[in-house]
View 1 (cartoon, rainbow, N blue to C red):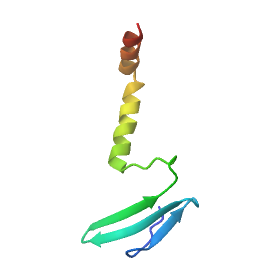
View 2 (view 1 turned 180 degrees about the vertical axis):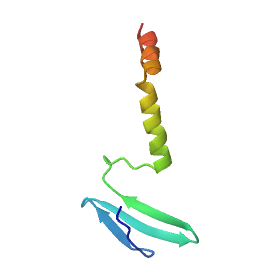
View 3 (view 1 turned 90 degrees about the horizontal axis):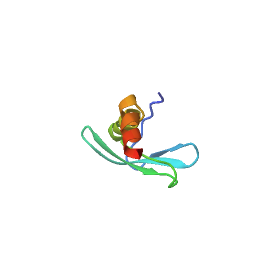
View 4 (view 1 turned 90 degrees about the vertical axis):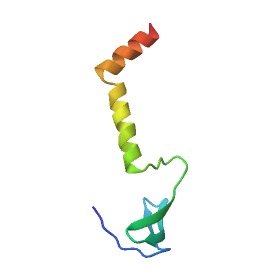
Length: 72
């Protein structure tokens, strides 16, 4: 993991087309802004994990059986 220090209104660039800017710092909370092309999905990690778990569940044996029943 790369750890960088940034101050308010400073930014980092990822992959030449994603800019992450520090908007505000209040105590232990940091507000960031992300500028990226529309085709780049951006999720909070907890939401991303939920999506991945739902995807895994849908391709599990139970999910496949439910799909089979639905298509029948």
